[in-house]
Length: 526
Image (cartoon, rainbow, N blue to C red):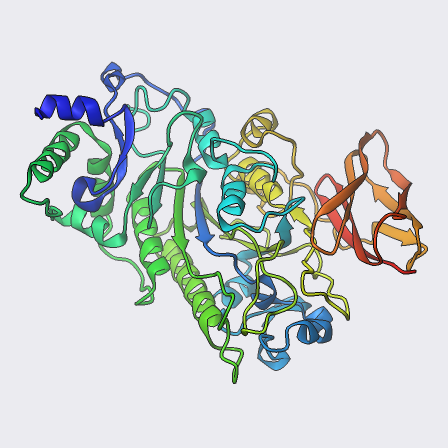
């Protein structure tokens, strides 16, 4: 096959080329429209950077943030994996929760005012399949909705319309988003093309900087691969700007060794300091599917999960210290996410099975430090299938970051996230504009009678505006919307919940009103 035919038949306008630039995998922008040199100004003026950290496999939230407020019930539900109360790391300003003993780095950051913890992030009708749940988190879809684009891809498409036509250009010379550690994530998928590029692994990044060519086999296909690399190096300008940015940084603070997440974050810090205009970076770490041997049976503070949490904690702390050392700390916000949490009750293999809601961490100098939400309630008697009900829709975290960190206006928010989600007070107002106060400490939702047999009256306070009251069953599923409307005035309102057809057990009433949410446990008896 001739080289011209090979290229024409195998390379569409935008494709992932594994191994490009010495293992440097990226979207090859070979469309002729690059020659137009169009000037595409970003929609929003900001130099803030977002770093997304994916904990792949479903992180056990209850052993990450230990519910000291309900410790005895927590221990009874998972005695073979529970962290001893006297080993839990304390957090400044609260005695209701604490951290896994391996997370000393995050503890230090929290106590320094650089971490916000969002309790029980999830969504209605959770999906427990790794693949589907990951798609939901990456796309920002409902559980019964299938989207072909990622939430961050839609944001970048809004900011940089018509990409890749006319990019790179004199206004935006740099990649819009960079992922390190895997093929470009679905998170970065735009409506038509991926909005990001991928560095396949940290070794490939350093090969790129050092001009080391990944070997190609001495075969016709290998020669064509070499030719593609040569052509791409001539036409693909992103590789050079990445090299130029990295070359500007010769000294960084120390990172832990034998830590793949730390290796990825070290590259991110270097590229940010090097001056890339890239707005979004994504890194990942796997291994969190801890069905068995989550802990060592003789000491639950060590084991697989402890090792994972220590690596995450140490990497994030080193990254934050490096950002400060490099004088770019003000511009960077980080967020962790996992496709789901784990069940409340442990299994017989010193592990935990797929669950629903789990905590998220948002970190950086500009976060509003503290805890968003209340300690997840754990009853005295927990069934094997019981889950933590979600307090915050994970897309509310996305919406808050987009609005208050990446400075997206409200109209664009609904275009990106497809719905109107509540805004959470997790970022200082100085980053973009004032955010809403956190009133989650007030008792805003009650019910009477409680316990109840068939019907109960739910009373709730609304500040006015959009208000939602949902009923969640013990499996974490939303089974009823009691209230879903806008109120023109602040006040206390009531609604009836008829549970006649439901089995006995613990149910949860979830109130959402603007930036406020609360979850109320209710007990149905015979």
